[in-house]
Length: 76
Image 1 (cartoon, one colour):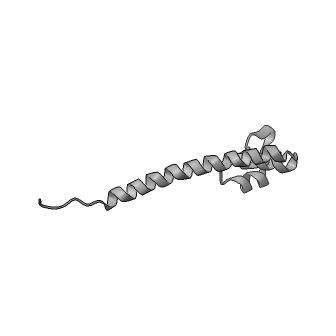
Image 2 (image 1 turned 120 degrees about the vertical axis):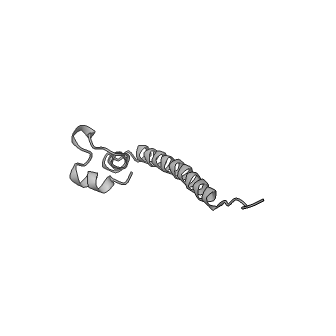
């Protein structure tokens, strides 16, 4: 997800798409081939994947932080 600039500058997706990432594929289809609808569909799919991953990660991190904050009563 974060390797757009390096891949684009070095290979433009590589020979026969060998180093194509979702971001380089989006730029290639959306702007270089002028398929704006297809490019925007890829952008929405990329957004949904990142959003779902972020929600799961946030839930995991919040649960981990809350478990560490709970204390048990000493004595009793």
